Length: 379
Image (cartoon, rainbow, N blue to C red; front, side, top):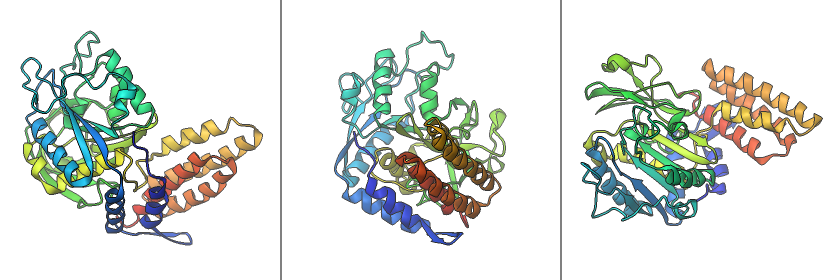
């Protein structure tokens, strides 16, 4: 499967921020988008798997999504396999679908740079472990292995409305947040929170769209990097309202792989909307490791765990780990207070201290945090 391009890690990080002493200024989304576009254009061809297999309610957009992704692939250098067989009342897409499951083994799945679940509802809301689900035990084991080996996951809309009895899948899609309910389709404002990720650089800060807006069983923020929230004051969220903090799109680094989720995309017209398609393409390319940027969906808890694990390597490492952890706590507090320039400066100091741990991963993750926070200055 495709791995992230190390060249991009340094190239985009340098382009995303303008650093002058302790002060940071965002270099702007245009430079990030241009760098990501250039990188994607020079990437080798890769493969994407689209899963539409439906055991429950059939979303009409699945066909539109599939065709749109195939077209995106033709334009941007990837090919698409489809798994969407006719099952029960679901007509599937027999003309496009693979005849048998592609989830036969981790090795079989490794041909795909990323795997998209395009709203394949399976009717497992009761959380009965005996109910048929999108992936059976053997298929799930193959998929887990794929993620653990660095595979990508793209979840669209009802990807949070399947596999309800499998906690691991809910954690993959987004910090255990599952579909709860939704009000009637209506116009609402999406607010971009992380503007320098490859899937958001093209978006306005406030993005008004007509769609079906999901309420979730929990707020995923503690476990994911939130990309976009919903402004509930701009629509009627119904009895599942989540309040002032309503994430609707997010991403995270999960057990070795990359996960990206967009809760919008129910309405068929999404897949002829150039802006929505650019947003979706960014998610595909980021999970495939073709593009980097915006902090690569890093979170403070993710880096704090790595730091704690490194503290087990002896007295010197324990001291350095405690020092880095203190910097992280200060940076997180600054970020939560809205002082993103201050957070970025503290993270620069943490990165300098972390070099003593002689671990490339922690240094790279701190650089991602620094890029993310620096990119929020002035947003």
